[in-house]
Length: 335
Ligand code: TYM
Image 1: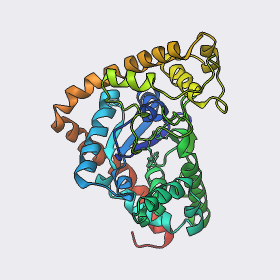
Image 2 (image 1 turned 90 degrees about the vertical axis):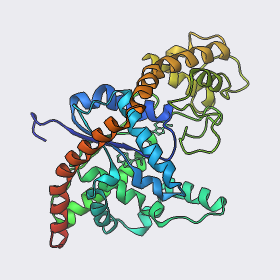
Image 3 (image 1 turned 180 degrees about the vertical axis):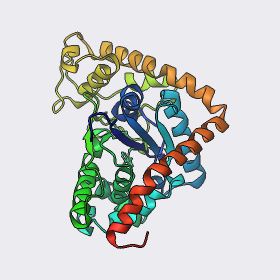
Image 4 (image 1 turned 60 degrees about the vertical axis):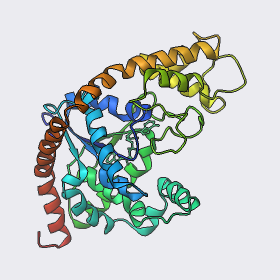
């Protein structure tokens, strides 16, 4: 990249459930506060990825618009960045097929998220969709189609990003330099926000048990209740130990992310879990307040949101098309 050129950033969120505090602290907040200001940034509601598990069509459509609305409410500015919906830009699927032709069956089956989700589907008695296995090929296509330099995500995306880099390198080696090698970036704190009821698992938007998940659109009273009931441990002094005391460490991480402090240092200021929880609850409520308010206004104007998404898709298409065409030609297709 030439010095004067702005970095290209791409990231996405999957409309499989209501967006959570994990999504916000792990990803969205940086998109809003930093990325859209310093780079040529694209943010995508990746609706095709939501079809990899059992889904209800009307719900996916609703959640897609809700995610886009929340991203705008949180502060993404369509004048500064490109916000769009994945299925409205065909280039993702065009390139995904080439990624499937670049990846091996074995490396797809090694993906932790595939193994976990496939096991969950099977336990429910459902079948595992083939698209769940090929998901990382589509994710690689999302990123590589745009010549992306940086991908700001939470820590749970590490393995998929590693695979994306492998695929980019392999494709370039086989067929000539076509893709930019993307770099992954994580937030300094709260790169993995844990479930408040099960502090050894990630706070995930599609989990069935919701008591440990703070949704961005939860009422303040609901947020408070969830935080106050967070599972900690039987000790009573407040120290930051991720391995031994995951529940307390998670609360300290969230507090640090909200207030800009350091989790270990913050721990020193508390003599009891109760006081810590009260402060975390208030910090989260305050953090989410402006986006909640703005969301209510924007949700009343779906035509505006749809217009933003239409413009975004058009811009994204124009950016992706030449590179995807080049990739088609490189592998021997008559693009
Ligand atoms: P998704 O929808 O699960 O999550 C969106 C973003 O939120 C981050 N995140 C978290 N960060 C910290 N703690 C948590 N508990 C937490 N939960 C979620 C995720 O790391 C992510 O950055 N595969 C992706 C979507 C995707 C994508 C892409 C991302 C598809 N194509 C291309 C980047 C680039 C996913 O399922 O994200």
